[in-house]
Figure 1 (cartoon, rainbow, N blue to C red):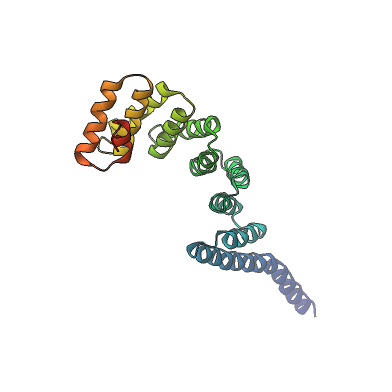
Figure 2 (tube, helix red, strand yellow):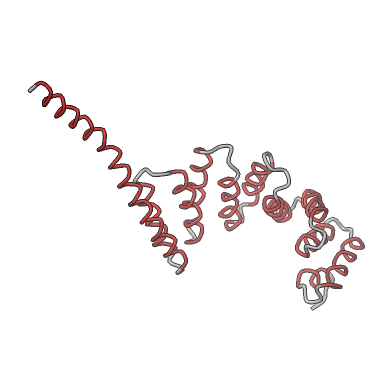
Length: 210
Protein backbone atom coordinates (compact mmCIF):
# COMPACT_ATOMS: atom_id res chain seq x y z
CA UNK A 1 0.00 0.00 0.00
CA UNK A 2 2.79 2.36 0.94
CA UNK A 3 4.66 1.44 -2.23
CA UNK A 4 1.59 1.99 -4.41
CA UNK A 5 0.95 5.41 -2.90
CA UNK A 6 4.54 6.40 -3.55
CA UNK A 7 4.27 5.26 -7.17
CA UNK A 8 1.01 7.16 -7.63
CA UNK A 9 2.53 10.27 -6.06
CA UNK A 10 5.60 9.98 -8.33
CA UNK A 11 3.34 9.67 -11.30
CA UNK A 12 1.41 12.80 -10.31
CA UNK A 13 4.62 14.75 -9.86
CA UNK A 14 5.81 13.62 -13.28
CA UNK A 15 2.48 14.68 -14.79
CA UNK A 16 2.65 18.11 -13.16
CA UNK A 17 6.21 18.59 -14.37
CA UNK A 18 5.25 17.54 -17.87
CA UNK A 19 2.40 20.05 -18.18
CA UNK A 20 4.54 23.20 -18.58
CA UNK A 21 6.82 21.44 -21.06
CA UNK A 22 3.82 20.25 -23.04
CA UNK A 23 2.29 23.70 -23.02
CA UNK A 24 5.58 25.21 -24.19
CA UNK A 25 5.78 22.69 -27.03
CA UNK A 26 2.21 23.50 -28.06
CA UNK A 27 2.98 27.22 -28.04
CA UNK A 28 6.10 26.61 -30.12
CA UNK A 29 4.07 24.58 -32.63
CA UNK A 30 1.45 27.32 -32.89
CA UNK A 31 4.16 29.94 -33.23
CA UNK A 32 5.74 27.98 -36.06
CA UNK A 33 2.40 27.73 -37.85
CA UNK A 34 1.78 31.45 -37.46
CA UNK A 35 5.23 32.31 -38.82
CA UNK A 36 4.77 29.93 -41.73
CA UNK A 37 1.50 31.66 -42.55
CA UNK A 38 3.13 35.06 -42.12
CA UNK A 39 5.92 34.28 -44.58
CA UNK A 40 3.43 32.88 -47.10
CA UNK A 41 1.24 35.98 -46.85
CA UNK A 42 4.24 38.27 -47.21
CA UNK A 43 5.33 36.40 -50.33
CA UNK A 44 1.85 37.05 -51.79
CA UNK A 45 2.09 40.75 -50.97
CA UNK A 46 -0.46 40.57 -48.16
CA UNK A 47 1.67 42.50 -45.69
CA UNK A 48 -1.25 43.37 -43.41
CA UNK A 49 -2.15 39.69 -43.07
CA UNK A 50 1.48 38.77 -42.46
CA UNK A 51 1.67 41.44 -39.77
CA UNK A 52 -1.45 40.08 -38.06
CA UNK A 53 0.01 36.56 -37.93
CA UNK A 54 3.29 37.88 -36.55
CA UNK A 55 1.48 39.90 -33.91
CA UNK A 56 -0.37 36.74 -32.88
CA UNK A 57 2.92 34.84 -32.69
CA UNK A 58 4.37 37.53 -30.47
CA UNK A 59 1.35 37.26 -28.19
CA UNK A 60 2.26 33.61 -27.63
CA UNK A 61 5.45 34.71 -25.92
CA UNK A 62 7.80 32.62 -28.10
CA UNK A 63 10.89 34.56 -29.24
CA UNK A 64 9.30 37.96 -28.75
CA UNK A 65 12.41 39.79 -29.98
CA UNK A 66 12.16 38.17 -33.40
CA UNK A 67 8.45 38.87 -33.60
CA UNK A 68 8.98 42.50 -32.60
CA UNK A 69 11.70 42.90 -35.21
CA UNK A 70 9.52 41.35 -37.88
CA UNK A 71 6.62 43.59 -36.91
CA UNK A 72 8.90 46.55 -37.56
CA UNK A 73 9.61 45.26 -41.07
CA UNK A 74 6.01 44.42 -41.91
CA UNK A 75 4.70 47.70 -40.50
CA UNK A 76 7.18 49.43 -42.79
CA UNK A 77 5.88 47.45 -45.76
CA UNK A 78 2.25 48.41 -45.05
CA UNK A 79 3.27 52.06 -44.72
CA UNK A 80 2.59 52.42 -41.01
CA UNK A 81 5.86 54.18 -40.27
CA UNK A 82 5.10 55.24 -36.66
CA UNK A 83 4.29 51.60 -35.80
CA UNK A 84 7.42 50.46 -37.59
CA UNK A 85 9.54 52.93 -35.62
CA UNK A 86 7.91 51.79 -32.38
CA UNK A 87 8.58 48.12 -33.11
CA UNK A 88 12.18 48.65 -34.15
CA UNK A 89 12.76 50.83 -31.09
CA UNK A 90 11.34 48.08 -28.87
CA UNK A 91 13.64 45.55 -30.56
CA UNK A 92 16.61 47.85 -29.93
CA UNK A 93 15.64 48.09 -26.26
CA UNK A 94 15.46 44.30 -26.06
CA UNK A 95 18.81 43.74 -27.81
CA UNK A 96 20.78 46.99 -27.43
CA UNK A 97 24.02 45.54 -28.84
CA UNK A 98 22.40 44.18 -32.01
CA UNK A 99 22.89 45.94 -35.33
CA UNK A 100 19.84 44.61 -37.18
CA UNK A 101 17.12 46.54 -35.30
CA UNK A 102 19.14 49.76 -35.50
CA UNK A 103 19.56 49.28 -39.22
CA UNK A 104 15.88 48.41 -39.56
CA UNK A 105 14.93 51.66 -37.85
CA UNK A 106 16.53 53.59 -40.72
CA UNK A 107 13.88 52.30 -43.15
CA UNK A 108 10.79 54.09 -41.79
CA UNK A 109 12.86 57.17 -41.02
CA UNK A 110 14.05 57.26 -44.62
CA UNK A 111 10.48 56.80 -45.84
CA UNK A 112 9.34 59.68 -43.63
CA UNK A 113 12.23 61.82 -44.90
CA UNK A 114 13.14 62.47 -41.28
CA UNK A 115 16.72 63.35 -42.09
CA UNK A 116 17.89 64.34 -38.60
CA UNK A 117 16.61 61.19 -36.94
CA UNK A 118 17.87 59.10 -39.86
CA UNK A 119 21.35 60.54 -39.40
CA UNK A 120 21.20 59.69 -35.70
CA UNK A 121 20.04 56.13 -36.43
CA UNK A 122 22.79 55.58 -39.00
CA UNK A 123 25.43 56.82 -36.59
CA UNK A 124 24.14 54.37 -33.98
CA UNK A 125 24.89 51.53 -36.41
CA UNK A 126 28.27 52.96 -37.38
CA UNK A 127 29.30 53.24 -33.73
CA UNK A 128 29.38 49.44 -33.69
CA UNK A 129 30.11 48.71 -37.35
CA UNK A 130 32.03 51.67 -38.81
CA UNK A 131 32.10 50.30 -42.37
CA UNK A 132 28.50 49.17 -42.63
CA UNK A 133 27.75 50.07 -46.22
CA UNK A 134 23.98 50.34 -45.81
CA UNK A 135 24.28 52.69 -42.86
CA UNK A 136 26.89 54.80 -44.66
CA UNK A 137 24.77 55.08 -47.81
CA UNK A 138 21.69 56.13 -45.84
CA UNK A 139 23.76 58.51 -43.74
CA UNK A 140 24.99 60.21 -46.92
CA UNK A 141 21.39 60.57 -48.14
CA UNK A 142 20.36 62.06 -44.80
CA UNK A 143 23.26 64.51 -44.74
CA UNK A 144 22.69 65.65 -48.31
CA UNK A 145 18.96 66.20 -47.86
CA UNK A 146 19.50 68.00 -44.55
CA UNK A 147 21.81 70.44 -46.36
CA UNK A 148 24.98 69.08 -44.75
CA UNK A 149 26.85 68.87 -48.04
CA UNK A 150 30.29 68.74 -46.43
CA UNK A 151 29.22 65.75 -44.35
CA UNK A 152 27.69 64.11 -47.41
CA UNK A 153 30.92 64.63 -49.36
CA UNK A 154 32.93 63.00 -46.59
CA UNK A 155 30.58 60.02 -46.33
CA UNK A 156 30.39 59.51 -50.09
CA UNK A 157 34.19 59.58 -50.25
CA UNK A 158 34.30 56.76 -47.71
CA UNK A 159 31.85 54.80 -49.84
CA UNK A 160 33.65 55.39 -53.13
CA UNK A 161 36.95 54.37 -51.52
CA UNK A 162 35.46 50.99 -50.62
CA UNK A 163 33.27 50.64 -53.74
CA UNK A 164 34.98 52.56 -56.58
CA UNK A 165 32.74 51.09 -59.31
CA UNK A 166 29.42 51.89 -57.62
CA UNK A 167 27.74 54.57 -59.74
CA UNK A 168 25.28 55.70 -57.04
CA UNK A 169 28.10 56.59 -54.68
CA UNK A 170 30.07 58.42 -57.36
CA UNK A 171 27.10 60.44 -58.52
CA UNK A 172 26.17 61.15 -54.89
CA UNK A 173 29.65 62.52 -54.34
CA UNK A 174 29.33 64.51 -57.54
CA UNK A 175 26.10 66.16 -56.40
CA UNK A 176 27.56 66.96 -52.99
CA UNK A 177 30.50 68.63 -54.74
CA UNK A 178 28.14 70.59 -56.97
CA UNK A 179 26.35 71.93 -53.90
CA UNK A 180 29.73 72.93 -52.49
CA UNK A 181 30.53 74.83 -55.68
CA UNK A 182 33.26 72.45 -56.82
CA UNK A 183 31.86 72.01 -60.30
CA UNK A 184 35.05 70.84 -61.98
CA UNK A 185 35.49 67.90 -59.61
CA UNK A 186 31.83 67.03 -59.93
CA UNK A 187 31.99 67.06 -63.74
CA UNK A 188 34.90 64.62 -63.71
CA UNK A 189 32.89 62.19 -61.59
CA UNK A 190 29.76 62.46 -63.74
CA UNK A 191 31.77 61.95 -66.93
CA UNK A 192 33.52 58.92 -65.42
CA UNK A 193 30.15 57.38 -64.61
CA UNK A 194 28.71 58.09 -68.07
CA UNK A 195 31.78 56.51 -69.69
CA UNK A 196 30.66 53.13 -68.33
CA UNK A 197 26.94 53.78 -67.76
CA UNK A 198 25.89 56.17 -70.54
CA UNK A 199 22.23 56.21 -69.48
CA UNK A 200 22.81 57.02 -65.81
CA UNK A 201 20.15 59.62 -65.03
CA UNK A 202 21.88 61.15 -62.01
CA UNK A 203 25.13 61.72 -63.87
CA UNK A 204 23.32 63.16 -66.90
CA UNK A 205 21.33 65.50 -64.65
CA UNK A 206 24.53 66.62 -62.95
CA UNK A 207 25.94 67.60 -66.34
CA UNK A 208 22.69 69.17 -67.46
CA UNK A 209 22.14 66.48 -70.09
CA UNK A 210 18.62 65.35 -70.92
